[in-house]
Length: 118
Image (cartoon, rainbow, N blue to C red; front, side, top):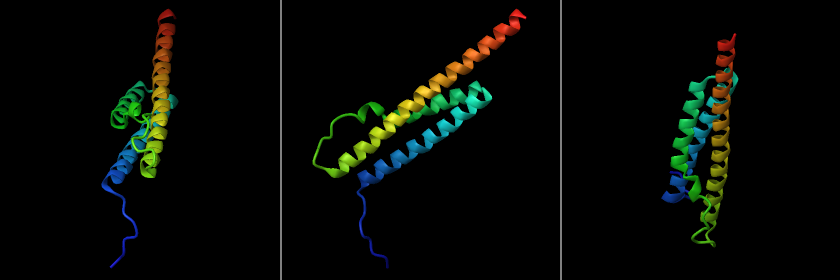
């Protein structure tokens, strides 16, 4: 029989799995944005933006920047720091998604206008 040295509480496990799910979604969004940027596919950019919004609803980045309820609790400080990092990464990816989608739509509009003139 194996001995258990330490075991996280249910809250820590829930925080870990929530961050894991958000990380997987953000990696998928980054991959889709890279594909959309490279191939100029608006569908991939729209899917990436929708997935980023879903991750935002799960992550709730606005709630990560409140002060800790128990400033002496190292677990709370640890997880609050992780949530803040994830929130900043989400914001950067969200802005990159908007910029990518805007660039693709603008480029298509310019190409269609050039074809209409010619």
